[in-house]
Length: 405
Ligand SMILES: *Cc1c(COP(=O)(O)O)cnc(C)c1O
Image 1 (cartoon, rainbow, N blue to C red):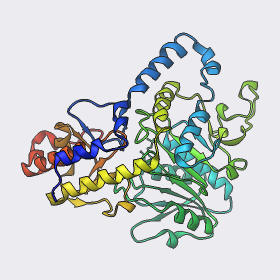
Image 2 (image 1 turned 90 degrees about the vertical axis):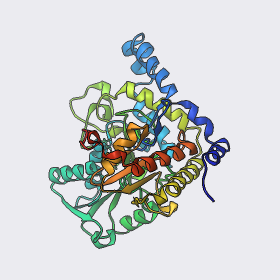
Image 3 (image 1 turned 135 degrees about the vertical axis):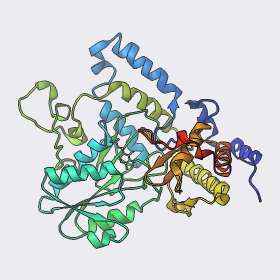
């Protein structure tokens, strides 16, 4: 049976999540399949940022640290994110970037395993994760051991491994790793695990129960806005012993006593460092209000349906699927390998279909169940067929790489 645009429109009409699209600003003529990189703008974020700037900052000025809850933003926002990842209140703190959060939790993990020298990270892990591992290893005089196509986790785990950093969903292929099984495997070896949830939070159900540490960003599926605060999770059982290597005043036990020496705050608050980006927090919290209402099982069901549809519609185009074919193993993205992925993606974006390119040869399409429709998937596949069929990507202006791909 062939799939029609009218059939897709019928799926949209029956979609339990269909009304959420109206929460977002989506330009006409654009099929936005880049919510896995920068989520769309929630309408309420526009109002919330205007309020924070105009009223909280403009009118109430410094009093807002108390009256508008600015001081508590890292914890109050962290608790909201915690609900999306199965964390208890007080286990998640929002702030800084994912990269900085990785530094903080990795160095804390090393301190909890002082007699173990090795940090494990995959060869294909997201570059910033690898770069921070390299910085942490150099700073704290540890070794790195890599997993990869030829070396599994079982091959590298041993009594000298302190911590394993691993992404739940691979940023390039969209493959999901088994969080429960891997966490058990790492802990059975006496090591600690740090999960990077950048491509899972807001894309599929996540449950950090039993996990030691986790980090994630909020500007992808959570629609927090460009540069929105990241978050870190520290299991309650580790909080008392865990230390923040970046021991700033916002993580101090009594910051307004202005003591000369650092004393860590209780709980996850000790992972705060300095003044939070209050305006970014406003945008993020507006989006999190939407997320508080969403059932993650509906998100996952629609995500699977959207990615299945896109794969079915693009099957005859001669592209090599780089994403797992089985939806159980796939996050909320579809990617293909193609020698000309870069100019193909540029030609698509020029025609209103937004995805991205990941070196060396991957084109990625992310599916955000809150605002992507089945007809969007249909139109994107249609445009991809046209760009490939007519070789529209061959134009000169698509060949030169822009700074951000
Ligand atoms: C997006 C992403 C990051 C982003 O790091 P920032 O410091 O927030 O820029 C890190 N790790 C992974 C796996 C990602 O997908």
